[in-house]
Image (cartoon, rainbow, N blue to C red; front, side, top):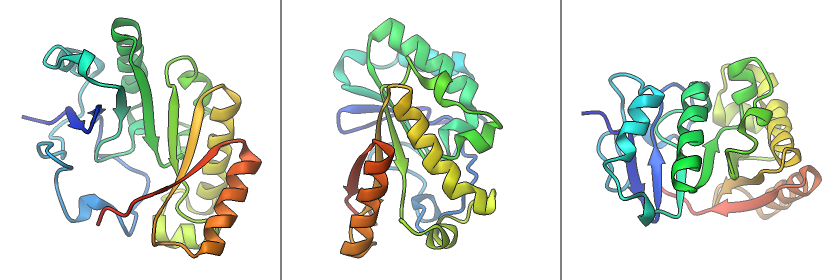
Length: 201
């Protein structure tokens, strides 16, 4: 049975898709098929919004501080399902909703998606990874090529302008102090928060 929902700490995570426009050199799914105590996160088929909503009934939703769209793929690859499931959860449970993303949803969907997320999504966590566009290309290996880095920054700024809390992240130990300062400056210019995540290797 596919794992659609799984627990991480106090959050309930939604695994929508295995599709991703990137082939990151550091991606966890190259080395494992689950996260924490989840079941295998490789999906035999993508769940519909109805599948996700049905899964909510198997969990005590009052136990969770947030619903997080983050699985083994890029959640904005399944944007319609994300929007429908988020709308249901927000109305039914009044739960905080976060999307963990590589920030390339505009390119994936061929349109600006921040206006669609606004009002449903409370927090958007975007993987910044590096302040250097060339290093980003080497690390993330996006299928969109050099369009990816500026699109990721524009998406983060767009979400902030639409009223969402935006956090851009890098991973501890992967950047120099100077690079982390450059990332902080990028985030300040965009009007978003900067967070250095612990390494999970």
